[in-house]
Image (cartoon, rainbow, N blue to C red):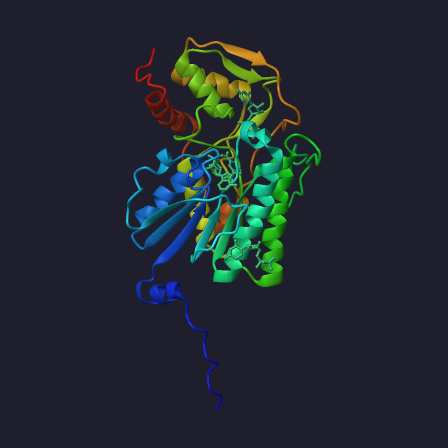
Length: 336
Ligand code: NAD
Ligand code: UDP
Ligand code: UDP
């Protein structure tokens, strides 16, 4: 007869969880575009308590205004490059500027956010035994030599270019996730997110969908960066959030691509926006930035098979939803 091993004392959180099966969830970068939609979805479940940590570099309290003051919600002004002490069961680690304009603005800070920020969140996950999900990016594939991109492709990234702070930063963040998993047994999830769009995108953040919609509403020419034949695949934000939650609560570490496989050239995107939003708007060809990937389309077989996930919202249906939000914020309520 062997007596059972004494189990360690439950932390106050685990103790409350034992009674209520509550879940306390940290969302870093939760004041941003994807993060705030994720918070909306998590808050729908009354068993969830949500803590957002954000330094408001590219996010805003406005995105979370409906939750401020809610008893299950807490907002902390915090930079993830500094240590953070909270008691949580889940960490969605999104904190990082996603738009090239912002991540190139202070590239050294972008690297710190990706490397030190992710290290801190892993240290936190280790201390409290939380499961942590990293929002990595299709940019880890660089200017891909494999098309469409599947998760086993190692990528084609310039280590010293102007995008490298973001691309290589995320690649190191992924490495850290897997090393903490192997070395310390942390439960990890890695999502490789492809271009995502929807309401609450920063109006002037320079990303292609937000640019074209704002330009069409303001009746300014749509700026297609040369050659215009480069492709992207655009995922509506509600589909993205659904994919992230499934990955977090599923049994697979990933990396798993989450994105919409519908692939468009930037010229096609401009034509679509023109048709849907402002048929009179002009399309103009402008200079491109260095290292712009020429094609991008996710292979989502893994997400389909392992998470039972695939996107539902087509570009033609998602763009008008975003138009409504942009018209409100640009104070241009009516179509021309
Ligand atoms: P976003 O810029 O709207 O949100 C990022 C949030 O992180 C902002 O609220 C910002 O203030 C916060 N932040 C930045 N640095 C921080 C720091 N050091 N400490 C604390 N908070 C910080 O971007 P998003 O589109 O919502 O992207 C969210 C995540 O998804 C990012 O990790 C991004 O790399 C990833 N991702 C996004 C896309 C996309 O198309 N939107 C594509 C691939 C990957
Ligand atoms: N960390 C944190 N919150 C915690 C625990 C750790 O922010 O609750 C930070 C900590 O400051 C450290 C990093 O996470 O810089 C990595 O922590 P870990 O314990 O893995 O490494 P060590 O502290 O031994 O370097
Ligand atoms: N792009 C464009 N016009 C713009 C902004 C971007 O044609 O006003 C192009 C850009 O050259 C790139 C694609 O759109 O090929 C996607 O750019 P974005 O910055 O949105 O995302 P990422 O490059 O990170 O995929």
